[in-house]
Length: 268
Image (cartoon, rainbow, N blue to C red; front, side, top):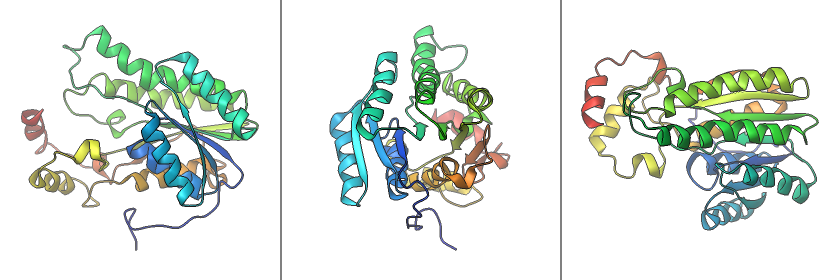
């Protein structure tokens, strides 16, 4: 059996579809954009960095896919609307929206400021609603995928309000699924610890081994692991799946991790 790290191949489940992936200039978002393109979709890559965005576009094009970059800051409602309109103008339609752009904060519920709260809510929550709202107007038979986190199910200290907002996304997905049906399906993908440059660049080998040990799969996730789940719920293979949350965390939230918590508190 192959793992997400070694699995490859293209199934063309999204052939002739048009997809937006927000926050796709790096990390998980890039992996999702590349996977949707490999599945046949024309992909709009979006983020704040034009250099990183164009690099993702070039990667997709070099692999034989179709991609276009639109710069957007998801804290700006006007940018979100422009992103959707530019996509429709470029590709004459919209079938898939992946709300992936997000930020994190490392504080607690008692120490967080209003600015901390607004920063995360505007980027990780309000933007998801607005992007879905604007995309819905152009979709006849589409899919919205909201990126949440396993922190929406079980969390650790000092990651507020990120964890609260991610839990809210799961509820947002259910509300959108009810209101957008039957023509648009809406689902959540909730990743766990995914090995990307931002999360592992300064990680010691000892810490990595500790993290891997608390996963029943024995490893950290990859962007490809998450992208596979996104491609599934975006495709007709998930035609009867809506309002659901799919956790992609290697079983981490299935394990009681009391022995890990004190160490985590010390390192935070």
